[in-house]
Amino acid sequence: MDIRAAAGLRVLAVNILGRFLLNNDRNIRYVALTSLLRMVQSDHSAVQRHRPTVVECLREPDASLSRRALELSLALVNSSNVRAMTQELQSFLESCPPDLRADCASGILLAAERFAPTKRWHIDTILRVLTTAGTHVRDDAVANLTQLIGGAQELHAYSVRRLYSALADDISQQPLVQVAAWCIGEYGDLLLEGACEETEPLQVEEEKVLALLEKVLQSHMSLPATRGYALTALMKLSTRLRGDNNRIRQVVSIYGSCLDVELQQRAVEYNMLFWKYDHMRAAILEKMPLVERGGTQDEEAKESKEAQLSEAALVATEPQASKLLDLLDLLDGTSGAAQPPPALEPSPGGTLVHLLDLPCVSPAPASIPNLRVFEREGLQLNLSFVRPPGTPALLLITVTAINTSGADVTHFVCQAAVPKSFQLQLQAPSGDTVPAQGGLPMTQLLRILNPNKAPLRLKLRLTYNHFGQSVQEIFEVNNLPVETWQ
Image (cartoon, rainbow, N blue to C red; front, side, top):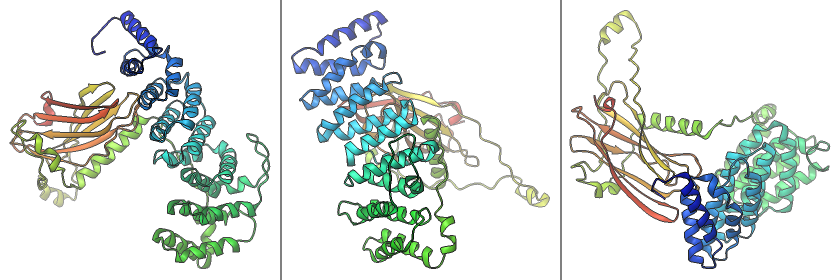
């Protein structure tokens, strides 16, 4: 797969591998799926022709085969087949083994985020995943769905009715209950209005809505966070329902003596709203403003990287020295021990500034081009550079890992070494998983002190798991821009 070949030869190879998928030998089918998964990045359209056969492999009783078929199926999802592929994957999610459920749910959510044809389809897809996968969904699924619903004003009535019906049917799926409680609290007034054009007529009484939220609060299956959602929803409904609020006030007061500190604090604060600040309650509990969703994942990654750079420039955390011991002497370098940042020198001309009462404006640092230092099977490693003004010997390098393949990169660890004349400090990474299909990148900050302004050499070691295999790469970066050390 790593050998350059003509397009016709690659198509021929893909077709042969496609025929291998029909072989009775499980080992041959596994090899074919693994090979197609590696080729999908170089010739997506050729592999796409074998999509029906790949989907059939999802029903394999062998766990290793079905896992590899799942990874390949997720890699084949695009804007033209997202509806059909999502339907197949959701059917697989309903019957797949528990150890595959989290990966399948995560893949469906990522595909829906990237290729959703309409907002309503996107909401319906996430709701079905929450209903089927339950606690196996990603931690950010609740926040993503509430953000999506909040930004789709035309679908508020539709969403609150769908979620109310789902909550009435099942209160055991905690992520679904949390989203439903949030939505009922925000748009409970729409739930009580007349028929919605998007759904069948649904007549809901105030008493039933309150009783359902009380049922969530009293359920032994509800997590403390879920009870917090339900309690806040009750408070929101106190300004949206037309009935008497005595029932809501009584429920809130009960949790003022709850053993859970967070829930108790919320209940005490809500009681204060009723008794001392009732005139402000409607304003405090009004609807959340529309949440603007980022246009592209690249913009979100850029904002995350800039925030990390700003935070790292102000606060230096302890480096992970223990993980760097085996990189010693690779470059005759340091172990990455924490070094105190150099003291900021007073800006020249400070006396004149005071005399003339003029602001001291530091010159803007020169922009340093980014550098791609590693690329393999969809995993890319990029370096971006910042030299803070006032500390010319200090260089901040942000290592950004991006994964465009169809499978998550897990247990990702990046280690670095520099020559002895430099001082290296590694900040903690943003995580150890690089999501598939261009998800939010993983970032890590390196602080390098170069007091002698010597040419910088950097040695990196990457260890991670990808496509079920453990990978280790060690390489040296010698082509850093001259702006990083001059």
